[in-house]
Length: 87
Image 1 (tube, rainbow, N blue to C red):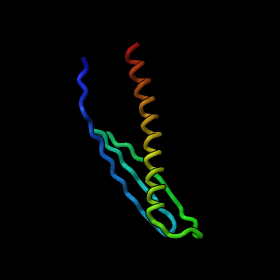
Image 2: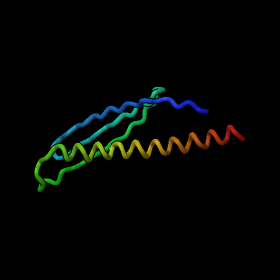
Image 3: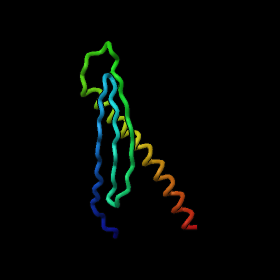
């Protein structure tokens, strides 16, 4: 029987707003110290009302999507390496 253990990864989100633009850098750190960074950007249409939370949500969401894509790619590399070791 395999014993499962809980793991904890942490994320830091850095939001920079300039005018109508919101830029985000998100950093995910795994329990073993590996870091994966993602970026996101949102731009408010000048005709739209200024609601900074919307830009934050979009840019942060896009940064986490970027991290997700990077994690999937990293897992693919790890799978290939594990398969080559097992042969």
